[in-house]
Each structure stands twice: as C-alpha cells, then as structure tokens.
Image (cartoon, rainbow, N blue to C red; front, top):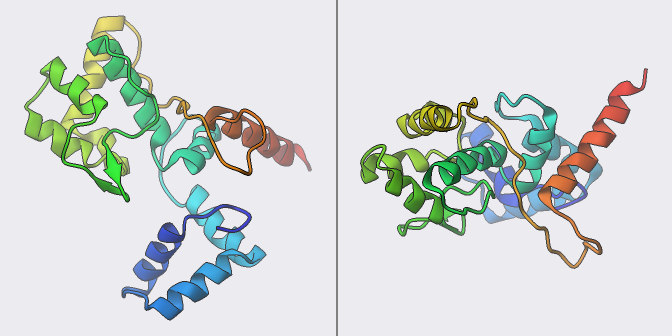
Amino acid sequence: LGSMQVSAAFTIAEVEKAKNRRLGLGAIWKLRDELYTRKGGVRYGTRMLLGYHAAYPSRLFVFADYNAGRYASRNAAFQHMVATLSVTKLALDGDLMRYDGGKPLPDASATEKALRSLKLMDEESIRADLLMGKVYAFRNTETYRRVASAFSKATGKPAPYAMLPQIKLKSPKIRHHMTTELFARAVMRRYERCMAVR
C-alpha cells in the first residue's frame, strides 16, 4: 500500500510484534490508512527495506529483495547452484518452495525436486531446511552448506551468495517491460546519486 508499496501483512506483523499482542480489526484499518500517508509510508517502507540482516555484498540485492521478498537474492543464487548441479532449468525467482497465501504447500517445488535428485541428504532434512528459506538462518543450514560445497567442487568457482532474481513484473501500473533486476538497478542508480550529494 501507499507510495512505497509496503505490504500490509508485513506492517501488521511488525506492529503486533512491537505491541506483543494481536491487533483488532479497527487497529488494522487505521494502520492500513497510515500506510497511505507520507509518514507511514516512509516509516514502514524504510523498516521493510533496511530492517533485516542480509550480509549482501551490495545494496543492489537489498533493493531487489524489496521487490521480490526478503532473501530472494540469496535464494536465487542458491537456486542457480542447485540448477547447475542437477542440470535442471529452474526459475531463479528466490522462492525455494511453493506457497499459497504466504504458507508453504506440502507438494515439492521444482527447486526441492532438483535438490532431492542430488541426494546430498535425506528428503525430510531438505524440507526442514527449505522451510527456513525466508530467514537469514537458512544460510547456516546443512542443505545450504552442502550445496555450496558441491557447487564449488564441481565448478571450481566460489559459491555465489546473491544473484538478482529473474522475475518479470506485471501490473496495470507498469507500462513498459519491467523486471526485478531492472527495478533494483534503477533504485541503485538513484541511491548512488543521493549518496554522491554532499
């Protein structure tokens, strides 16, 4: 919602976490209205953009995550490694699992199927680790470590930690070809211009 296109679900979760209680419907509608104001858009948009630890080598990936979802850039790099190892074409979109309404579905995604085919570990462990795909700790899972190690051994290259997700954006508001990569690069150019001003 609003000028910074902040997720209402994200904002509600942030406020509920801060207040340590669930919000009633009236408070949720008030919060939604606040997102349409400059103050609310900047407050929650900045929190959504910068309020998480990612350890990316460049802000470019943070800007991509703003569009594609937290850790989508890290997960796209992970998908690239899995695709390379399994010789499988995968969508490098940062979604390691299939979701419906933000909840993971029980059936395996293409990424999970490709991972299983590598036989680096048992299916239950892979599934448990992929369920952490939306948090920072995923990079410390056994699945992530084994894939990164296997990729380095197979290619002789260091395991990439971040890649720009390859998502084509569609909306009635978008008049020209737009992707997550184009969005992130445009924001990065503006960011660099702003940072250059003294």
